[in-house]
Amino acid sequence: MKLKYTVLLSAICLWGTCGYGIQLSAQNVPSLKGAVGDRFLTGVALNVNQTAGHDTCALRLVKRHFNSIVAENCMKSAEIHPEENRYDFADADKLVRFGEENGMAVIGHCLVWHSQLPRWFCVDEKGKKVSPEILKERMKKHIHTVVGRYKGRIKGWDVVNEAIEGDGSWRKSPYYEILGEEFIPLAFQYAHEADPDAELYYNDYGMDGQAKRNKVVELVRMLKGRGLRIDAVGMQGHMGLDYPQIEDFEASILNFASAGVKVMVTEWDMSALPTIHTGANISETVAYKKSFNPYPEGLPDSVSQAWNNRMKEFFDLFLKHSDVITRVTAWGVTDDDSWKNNFPVLGRVDYPLLFDRHYEPKPFVKELIENNSEK
Ligand code: 9MR
Image 1 (tube, rainbow, N blue to C red):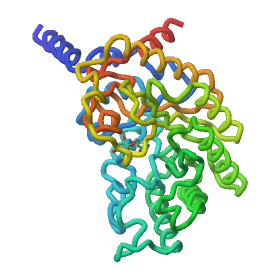
Image 2: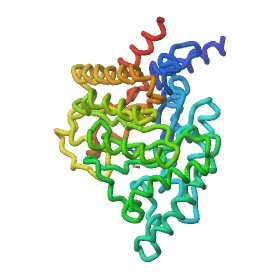
Image 3: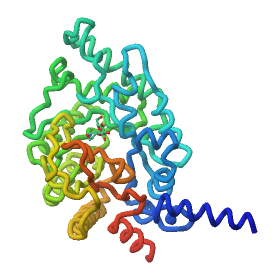
Image 4: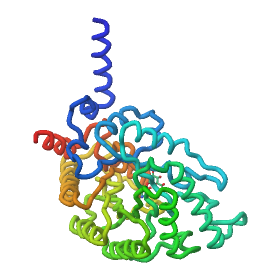
């Protein structure tokens, strides 16, 4: 009797703390990954609070609904390689172990990126840019060490992140300034040397734009032309209620696929707040104004409906192109986890992810699960 009471009580507590998502966590209850099936991997980015095991409600959702994970931050070079002779693998190790224990495809993010780059990486002790030879050596060592550590355990790597501007020109990153565009094939070469079986990706935001789309196609062709491995292009998929146009997003999927690579939606989220700008470059922030943060207490039904309809439209697009799309990854578990609460304006309350702050699936996710479990 006492035991029954305790079990009942803990069930009520879990319900109260973690919401409907937890109910879905019970065995044999339909899930998002079940609804998607083998059409593509259903992925999510984890933060360190989650990989450390603290956010247990989120972890239950992750285990139930997703079959692929990626590190939101802990594999970036500033985190994993803060000083030239010091690596910090603690969080990344936890992430990889969690993925393995739960039979998930683990994705590595990211090897070469101008942002979250440790201060030492591209300069000498006097703060002057290092020579091309030194930067090549550093890149090689970084990539060989990180990729090598997880050899055979990571399905694929975002090798180069955000190297192209919206107008189709090369981003003038420290890598570019020192090595020119050559840093890109070098990074792919080093990654392949370190784990010949790992898939390799180019990842970027704003991929619906024509100029960037064309440049990415050119880049894929250049890498392939040199005999280098590139498996997929990652379209980050940071969206808003009024961008991107679904036709433009679709055109990019088709263009990338026809260049001979698979496509992944790697960082999917959709802001429900007024659009300030459409970029994802974290240095492009804007000062807070009350009018930028209109729904601190919750989304009005009309906005929620528009958001859900638009998310469904995009999800249907991903399903339509599941012959070329191999993974769709949400950039965080619940709305509370999202970087969008602080970008491009610090301190807003946004609603961009698949699960809400009570760990409940959003209506379009619920519908997707329910429709697909009836079949
Ligand atoms: O979501 C990430 C946020 O927590 C970090 O502060 C930020 C800087 O490292 O990076 C965010 O993730 C970015 C991703 O790594 C690359 N594409 C754009 C994402 C949003 O800025």
